[in-house]
Image (tube, rainbow, N blue to C red; front, side, top):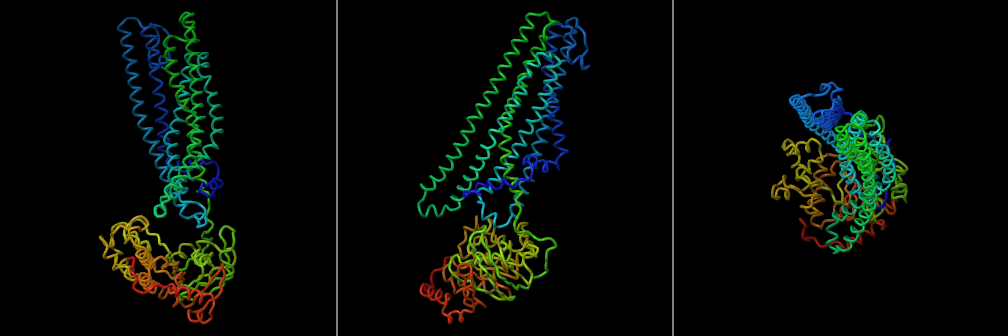
Length: 635
């Protein structure tokens, strides 16, 4: 990964050609896609009829030529000369009816083809986004640590939308080109093989030029997509940190950073645009030259030869130009489609590269899936580092009995939080083993293991929704009931909230449990969010509970309230309490002090104070800083 979230590494995990991978998502809809293709071909065929009607009308009705023409050879009209005004008018009426039928068929089949193909593209987009999101959710934490949210959002939104647009427009254009060029080539060849060769000469040349254009533009579009990812990451970071920007008055600094990313995107887009426009202009010039050549050669032949000896009849000559207009329009579109193809391919590489990325932490074959977990946890000579860097946890040995509370203390960066993340297998150890109930956590089914472990973080994440929904998130049945506006599990939600000492403030909210908390819970205070998170963990009824500095961001009075909730939550459960404030863990069954990834001392609060080591020094330092009781609560 690039430092700014470019996701260049994701392209390396594409399995097969990225555009062919789209076929797997199209296969379930092959009946409607096939019907759409058939309707599109019928639309193109119907568009070929009016010029033939015009040619026939000029030759046989206006000029009175005895040549049968294409429609007569197909058996649609009678052959031979048409004598008399009434016969000509009757013949013209038949031509009008044929043209009207062609326009009717064209209208009906065009609606059918566009509806069927565009709706199929929407279904493919929906399925692809759902699967990509689900796959992303199951990737391991190391992926999220190494890739920024803005880049992920770019893949889920703009890249998948671009693939839908490609299927929606360029696939139809491909049908249009193949059907139109094939049909027109056949008709022109029927009227005049020699003049048709002149008219069709640009077709292979445009194909070769478009192939060269594809090769040239591909690396540029890859670079553009990476630049978009970086720009999205910068915008996402700045919007997420808007409070910090405002607090430090860094508007100008952030404006400059966004402007630099925008300028890079602008420069790459303009460079590609310059060549792209030149390519399309060259195609138009080339097809214009051929148009003029056909006009001269065909016109000279009609002027200098008798009607039967000319390269083409007068009516067919008129049809030639009607067809040329329709022939070169889709041919010029090839260059534009080539441009869209490379954009789509660049997006497909990111999407299918993400789908090809496998999680590093997975459920093993024949996993251990117990009905219940007692809560015994052991660390046996455990070492861990992020991405092979310096060890964050180094040779840890620790035993925790079921129902025991362990306090983890030590300076910032000592490895306390990292150690607790190894219990639910958010990461796998580099060396040693983490055991739950005497079984290596790598032997567990991830679902039951993580159901048995609840985590309350330092800054708990609340989803945009109601208070009840956020508490109910701790239990699948309760959450489903809340989302369905069903009160079947509301009593359990209220009970968990009471146990977390949160019911009083929730009841005082404008709509009680149905109050919206805002994005990330911004409408609640830090202490309120913590207690909602505790209630959520309580509802999950875990065997093992992890508190990751749950009281570090609140005042003393709120800390006491949260501590009451923690005491309720850890009762009869194995608990790991990562503490910045040592008062939170003074009553723990054992306190483990870490420094630089190692355990430097352990024991009870009284024993560690008596020992006079690192813990005693930290306790004395915090005692000097501890505020007076009765400080105003942020609640």
